[in-house]
Amino acid sequence: MNSDPRKLPQLLYIADSDESRSLVRRLLAYKFVVLEAANPLDGLGLAGETHPSLILIDNNLSQMTSNEAASRLKKMLPYTPIVVVSGDTKPGARERSLAAGAVGFIPKPIGGDFVELVDDYLHGKVDELENAELYLREYQEELATKIEDQTRQLTNTVERNKYLLQQNQKMFSMLERRHKLLETASRVGQMVTSILDLNELLRHTVNIICSEFNFYYSGIFLVSDDRKWAVLRAGYALAGRKMLEANYKLPIDEKSMIGRSILTQQAQIALDVAGEESRFKNPFLPNTRSEMALPLIVNSISVGAVTVQSQDLNAFNEEDVTSLQTMADQVAIAINNAKLMRELESANTEILRTKTYEAIATATGEAIHWVGNKAAPIPGSVNRAREDVQYLLALVAQLNESELDNASLAAAVQTVREEAEASGLDLKKILADMSAMQPKRLQALVSVESLLEDLDIAENSAKTILDIKEGLIGPARQRNDENVSLSEMISNTVMTMGLPHGVVMLTWSEDMPLAHVDARQIEQVFNNLIKNAWEALLQSNTPDPKIYVKGRGDDNMNYVLVSVQDNGPGIPKDIQEKIWVSFFTTKGGKGGTGLGLSAVMQIVNQHGGKIWLESVNGSGATFFVRLPAEK
Image (cartoon, rainbow, N blue to C red):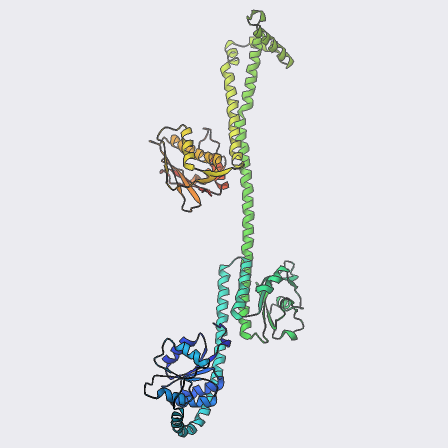
């Protein structure tokens, strides 16, 4: 089907009935430019003006019969096929129409083969007529007396209709173009409110301008930061892509229409570019004959310009300029909105970066504080243990080797004396100080229990520091992802935790997929979650404490979902966000480092999963863990 109406054959249909004309128009409009006349005189005038490729005449006409109209049209346009569309069922109706000059006769009502019949007549089909001379002679005698009387009236009508047709065609063309202008302006207005990505906005704008108005080319230039250049940011079709690849730009001066429109903030029009000396001759667009440059203005400042180019001379009229400038103003607003959005995103990024640095600094300070608190008992315990060892060495050095039955023990005592002296210990002075002490004081100094207690303190503090290190560094270790059965892993984890029988209730759906994770790290996740739940239940003295672990396929088939729920008091709303922060703990001085949930979130996030909490105070807490399913 030819989509260009200028290339379709013209067909004239003459009929008094609006319904008949509407029906024929609907049936034939996709293959023909259908011209219509409501009476024979108008039809004759229109035929003389347009010279259609084929003429259809309805038999039920006022002023003259279809046969009379066919005869007159045959004289006017001897090579144009004429077809009578008739509901006349009288004998000889078809023959009389053919004798009058028609090449065909289509009976009413119109059938499903109507379009094909019209097309056949257009391409040369002619119905045969027997006894043609008889029918022709009768018809000529009938027409002879009527033609002369109607000729003068017909001539006047033709002239009047010709003028009206011209006016209607001009009006139709103007209304059609105005409609397109308004429709395009509306589309650009919609983009202003819906597209905030600058590159996408500019690309859509040039495409709409060219596709709606069948222009040769459209492009959008934006002013560079130094305001010396107009840089092409969007161009239509292949020429536009080539210019963008070449980083096409124009100086902002009077030598180009783009530069001049930016400087003057006024539209620049060249209806014949051959006579426009200041227009830049663009090698990428050799067929341009008319061009218009429209400034993009925001807050009285030119931010760029739009170029619209046509292959036709005098392609732009006053309405084009007004409508396209309105669109250009809307595009300028959209460009400004996009730039503001980009600046806002940049500001948000900077704020986020600042907050991140603050969080890192806070976490680092808290880490140092924690390590300092845990390391603080170590020096005191070591000093006390050192003193206890010195007192014990002094006592050992006083042993008489001869009184020892074992030679090895005697040698060990001698070694103690020698190494103590070599290390600078004055065992005799220490012993003298001990002799001067009260008995109770002396017994306290040489207490083995006290010595072991100090060693325990130092050991526990060091272990806590190592646990903190593991909580901070552990999640960042290299992963070894594989397909893992979470149901088996979590079941084994629960068995090794030593929890009372019946506390943890495990439920797994039959379609629960494997998870693609690092088994060691994910085991740490659920160990921490179940351990935290149990400690919360103990701390709150919850009667009949229960922990419910459930696993199933997630709603998104690419993930598996596991929940860990307890029937404890829940987590207060005001601390639900804080629990994920490093070193935050609700366990007070009962040994918690505050790194468990922080490490859990880090591990889950690094796996491309998600963890979240749902809790109502007094109704327990549920942690949901979504992890990637097997690949």
